[in-house]
Length: 158
Image: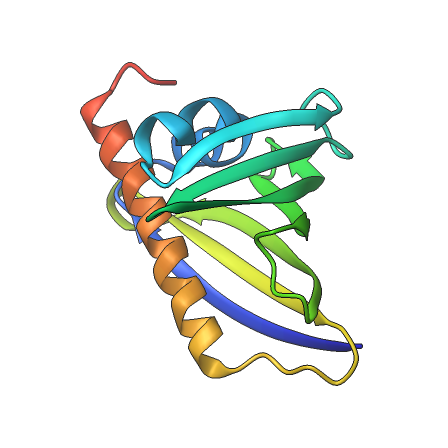
């Protein structure tokens, strides 16, 4: 098994507590409403606390795929949200899982910075190339911008 790590930050105009809530606590309710590719988020097990397993279904083009997300850590006081993606049809056969460690920090001018550390756990001697890192950063930036846009358009969302 190999472990490949990638770290990056995404800046947002939204305050840390609002971005965190939308990204972590409200992920299952909010994302299918504002991101076309996310068809559904279903709770398979748990109540939203650590250990909860979600089934996330994406629809892209003519097909759909799904993956399971396990909440590892959710700490609203520290704005930490860690989860693993495992199983389903959304991971390459050569990957065991991906873990995301996220922390939302105070950014400039009342905004925030979402720091992410992503670890790819591969099977056998499989590798993860730089293109995967670049694409995952693009997707993460896009997701934060979707959330930011929604939150800026909905100032009453707390």
